[in-house]
Image (cartoon, rainbow, N blue to C red):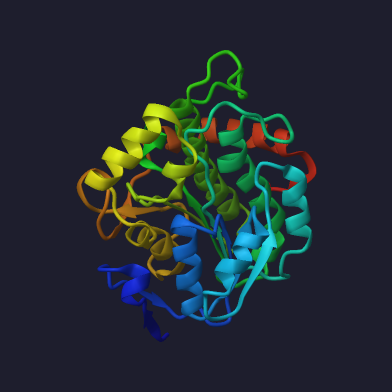
Length: 310
């Protein structure tokens, strides 16, 4: 299979190579900025047909005009399960790559269109419903992958099933960490179910390390935003292009297997070359994963039809 090298602009110093994606259809959520725009541009540059799944179609159209290749734009608001249903109804008949990348971070407590805590709704529940709704199309591909983006902050995540809206006590960091733990639990449980169903689809986790993207600028407020954008990002963060490398590796490298986590291999997994890593211990709890799956099915309603478990 021919290999294509990303340009210096795309990947800066990383010189990463990805296999040709010619003939493959990729859906990238949150594609208008940060990691998502790098991933979308890179996959299109490697020959994939890329669907930018974005909340703001106007912004998506402006971005699409800067990406050479087969790129289209579809509206997707992960905070609204009705929008997820509409997106699924108009999705391509075959999907080879689904990159569950979109996310919000550190926002004040708000509820989604269906009344769910917003970070949990966007980062986990919307992607849960989207993946469930697209499983038939993913199954039509002989080599499909679902890449769900998590974070090392999942290590601090806790899920209180008795207060999923966090009405008793809301902390922005706790809500974000919980959503990233949910991403990890979901990705691993999805892979268990796919294996049990003898499906060719692979579910893979990826995390970017500490990458400077619009998620730190657009979500947090006050001192939290100041610490991230004025201190943390300049001192410690990698670029969005470098942070996208683990996502691209998880999506395209032939060595990746279902149920694996790909992230930066450097100190504290903050940056560095993509490496096969171990998920945080709590994400490996199958009972917790099953409970989250059941609750997510109930909350998502008819937005998707997740694969069963033997």
